[in-house]
Length: 73
Image (tube, rainbow, N blue to C red; front, side, top):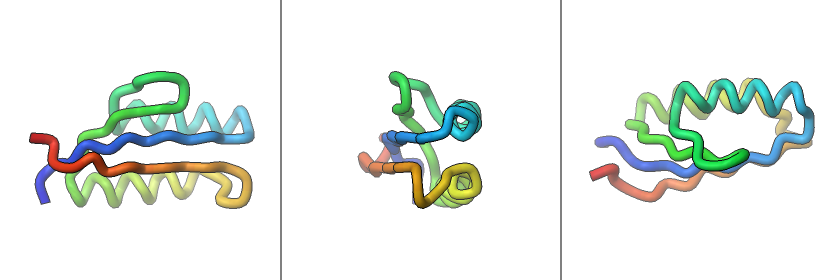
């Protein structure tokens, strides 16, 4: 799989977790606005990204949406 463009939007209820997610997101993509990033990822990087975010968010309290917009070409 070549690189795809992803839009990532999140709503994190805790300020400390929000800051951690925001900081982590800066390592994966380009900040668009508040809690929305655009990321260009291949399959391996996507798996690392999803694992990293999964460790940071509360699955009971937070919301995270990752949309695949298709090939980066």
